[in-house]
Length: 398
Ligand SMILES: Nc1ncnc2c1ncn2[C@@H]1O[C@H](COP(=O)(O)OP(=O)(O)O)[C@@H](O)[C@H]1O
Ligand SMILES: CC(=O)OP(=O)(O)O
Ligand SMILES: [Mg+2]
Image (cartoon, rainbow, N blue to C red; front, side):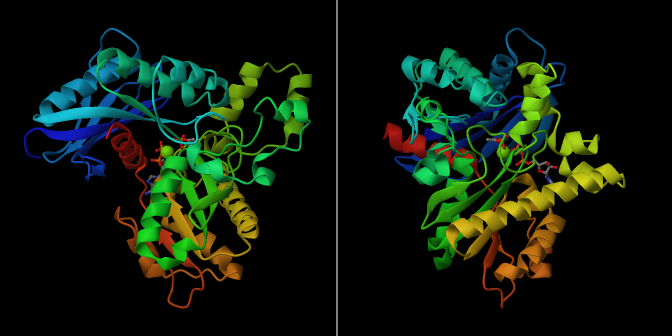
């Protein structure tokens, strides 16, 4: 990078990690990030590591012990990374991924005391994310008081959901309190939608996009707009996830409450002790489960795949047909076996993949994997949520 290059710092502060990337900025234009990384192991009792990927290569080092909250210490570590790897760069704004924008934000905003206070009221709707996202915002506002801090919301992309999709069949009094479906992973869906629109004219039609990471959801995107999605009021709905249950009959929760379970117990079980981890009893990490011969590891993968297929069918029905199927997120981008099984099972929709292309598509590049005679295009798209956040920040400060 040349001297005095402007750049936007994109931050994704989660419960156990702080991901960052520095995007060169020229007015409203955003370049490829020459510096990115992850400070992981920030949970209580974790052993924090600072992983950096820069033009000088990759490095991993331990986070030094020190004063302050884990996010403040991670921020100090990030400052030292920036001092070492980003000399001559002027940071113009910090773009924060924030999962919940509630009913107030359908687009990214400049964060101030009032907006942060509102976002704070949404913490119980996304306990795994929102408090940590906001801890990141507080730490950055304290240490960089002169920089604009921008909030970029996972819910915003789903502002186009039709009323019949976002409304629960609940009494009006509850609906009036903002109890509705919001949808999440919106920065990722926007990124994937934009990339596919550049690649294929069929992306203007009916797309099912599966974001399969630690959190997982699937969305139906029609003419570039979200019309249905599997996550709802919270990031707990829909697919099975790493540690989250996904959709569970609310009758189960009522049963447990009657048995004397507290809301804290329920919250911990549903958000942290379920999903791949809960079913397998081994790990929340798909790679570990793939490598295991244990029957419960196979069951966990089986349920994950089954629920994905179920939702793909439901979303295709909402779209009245399918033109493009896309995979993204850590599992969607790398798990060849999952893509193969899912696509074979979706052959009734006209989906047919090219096995060689499917095996090739783990190289961190956007790639089509459908066979020539497939009536549905199938793509693997490495997501970049930070880039969408940085783009919005560039637009807001320009
Ligand atoms: N090669 C791989 N095969 C299967 N799963 C993978 C592979 N690489 C990463 N994953 C899975 O991706 C998931 C993490 O996804 P990611 O999108 O990175 O998470 P996050 O939501 O934290 O950003 C984990 O379950 C991990 O096992
Ligand atoms: C909204 C959500 O589930 O996010 P993540 O996949 O980062 O956990
Ligand atoms: Mg993710």
